[in-house]
Length: 130
Image (cartoon, rainbow, N blue to C red):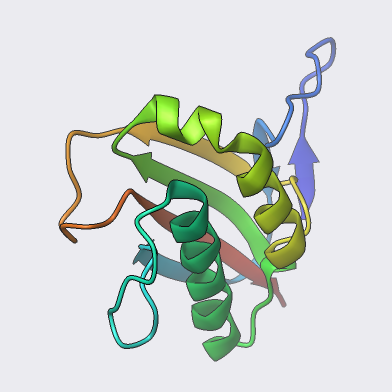
């Protein structure tokens, strides 16, 4: 995997501008903050983010992938202020479960998600090298 940073651009905080990779692509559907039985254990943003990230890791494992193979991550949040306020807690969970910021990342505020109690949804693309 190669992190893409055009000459003269400042290094972004918490993500990469782009990533180039070659191998088997793994697409993880949007994961929300519920457990394997579709139960929410918290309505807190940071807690749901931690669970959604854990869900991403579990799905990746089914493809023989790890968080190190993630090349793109999209966050859908229903309240950007809530997302920003939980930044430190999200960062701790991200570092613990994912470990690296070298992914192309997008965060988008949306009006609602399909799971009624969900505060966020995380979608991932990973590439397992050949």
